Amino acid sequence: MLVREGVRTLISLEDDLELVGVSADLDGLLKLVDAEVPDVVLTDIRMPPTGTDEGVRAARQLRESHPGIGVVVLSHYLEPSYALALFADGAHGRGYLLKERVSDIGQLATAIREVARGGSVVDPKVVDALMAARLAARSPVASLTPRERETLAEMAQGKNNAAIAESLVLSDRAVEKHINAVFTKLGLGAELDVHRRVKAVLVFLADQGRLGEPTP
Image (cartoon, rainbow, N blue to C red):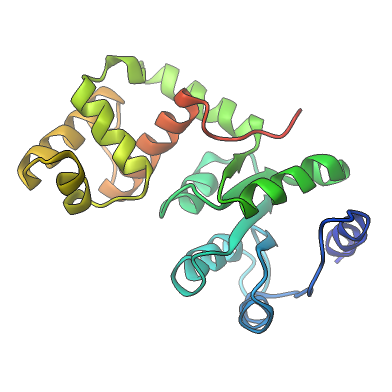
């Protein structure tokens, strides 16, 4: 509650930001979004009823019901898996920040504005953790062939295999072959396909400098 009220106060100080409502749980949040249809939802990673991953679940539901609404998730946890889950359905219009950023309204407001424009923001510490994992796996994007890089770029836009095939004028089998090669070269060969796909995209976005970061 203290964090929620503090954020409410900070946002009210920004002339170009309007707070349209506050909710304390997932159900209340989704109902509020349906009623107000805001540009951006700012949510905790954990809230009632289960206190586990409601922020990520809200982002997923809103991607389906309100695809134009951005979501910024705040978290205490320097855990890349939460960010991976948040970006599982695409990085556009999504942000993941550690709660320590709340103390600086400039950083928080910048993240909100970026996500409202359809951009993406990831806390620098989370990016560092992802990059460290990439280096540990010895999986630089530079090792990909031009076609594999093109395929990964299409994946980063949230396209499925059929859409990638159409865009690159390839067969479905060729796309699958390129994606499997990407997974192998990025050291992502021993995980569920959905997790490998998300991790590959995040590594690509970080490598391209397309994941916006608030100033440390």
